[in-house]
Amino acid sequence: MQRILNFINGEYIEPISKQYLKGFNPALGMVYSEVPDSDERDVELAVSASKEALAKWGSTTQEQRSEVLLRIANGIEARMEEFALAETNDQGKPLWLSKAMDIPRAVSNLKFYANAALHLNGEFHQTDQHIFNYTLRSPIGVVGCISPWNLPLYLFTWKIAPALAMGNCVIAKPSEITPMTASMLGEVCNAAGLPKGVLNIIHGLGAKVGSAMTKHFDIKAISFTGGTKTGAEISRVAAPMFKKMSLELGGKNPNLIFDDCNFEKTVKISVAAAFTNQGEICLCGSRIFIQDTIYEKFKSAFMEEVKKRTVGDPLNDSSKLGAIASKEHFEKILSYIALAKQEGGEIILGGGAVMVEGRCRQGWFIAPTIIEGLSYDCRINQEEIFGPVVTLVPFTTEAEVIMMANSTPFGLASTIFTENLSRAHRVAAKMESGIVWINCWLERDLRTPFGGVKQSGVGREGGFEALKFFTEEKNVCVKI
Ligand code: NAD
Image 1 (tube, helix red, strand yellow):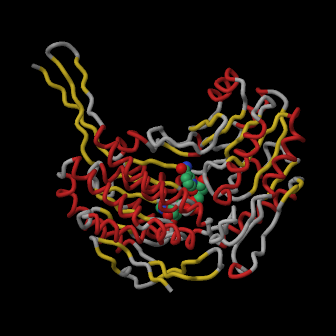
Image 2: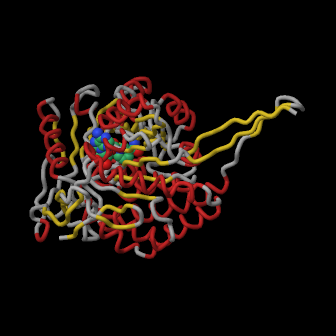
Image 3: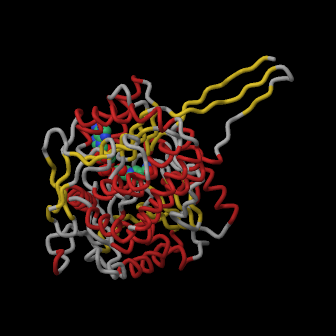
């Protein structure tokens, strides 16, 4: 049994309550770790440590902070195998995916912000020859970063890297479902020479730790990634306190397939967009709209390709889908599959739990599931399932598919497949989403603004947006 500890003021310490939650390996369906059941007292300790560290960290030069971040990145990279295995054991995703995507991206996040921060310029505005304005940017102070379980270290570092780069001290809370890699990060930070108290990592439940962070007067900003309902709760508490907030929330992303697409490429990318990470990526394309002229052809090619995606032990290279991250989420996905049947959908592939032989007999696995025959506005096509479940919906005209694609309360990402350049740009401009991919999916350039519209969030991460978020701006006006 691995006992995880909080990382406060550069030291690993027990939660004040001395209570622990059960941490599961989802592929085994078994408890394998103890996760601190922290509360507001641990948050208070971390805030004190952060406040103490603030003056020193905030007055380091940009170059010094960048160098520390680069050393943290290199420290993770040097332990790539160990981090990848920890991520897989905690989250359930295939080990090859942790090695190819999650941990390398965590390294890239740190390297990217270490470098980007060196290039963030202030602004200068000249009114006439006697008056000019310039902008000063200073760290906000102590900030809170709260992240989810689907891409644990990937999203954790995506927040803390820009916050630290701009000179803030951070109280960070990973998901209680996947705390392992975040807990390992403390060792790397100490070895990299990050001063004590600059990054504090507190484990525990959202309702205790997350909520104590949101309420804390001295935590001046909250950067949150997670569900829309939680985002609303955080806003309810933080908005009247005038905290800065960045909210990256849920999605129900449409994938628009026109009959003039590059067919083979479209099938392959659509399968990846649907089932990578067991469909547990906020950007997954789970509503697949297909022009009726190629509906049947696409359906059979798509099904053939999905059948090749083996569900299995995450430690096997042949497993394309691993386990679902928690039992609760496993049951939620199955309940949506049951609802799809009630709503009149036909399950044309998958449709239930998968029993994986060997050490994973008790794990939480679900077959990639394809459903057809549902209307665009039923619950299955409107609510976020966040699992390996997609629907196929035919359409006739461009106007019709735009209407259906935009019909949900979410607006995170859209994917369009067409070889017609005019159509690609015309439809992209009409998508109610923060991101549009044309003939590709999950191509990420870390300089681009990342985020959603409608109930998918407020604000943007990525590039200079996140660096600016973690600063306060001051306009200085000079009259000569
Ligand atoms: P969640 O909202 O349940 O939890 C996210 C984090 O918030 C966890 O650390 C949790 O402990 C904490 N939390 C829970 N209640 C809280 C509260 N009252 N106050 C403060 N913190 C609280 O989300 P999840 O189930 O971990 O993640 C899945 C969701 O995240 C999906 O909806 C998915 O779409 C979304 N997501 C969005 C993005 C994006 O970039 N937009 C990326 C990944 C995941």
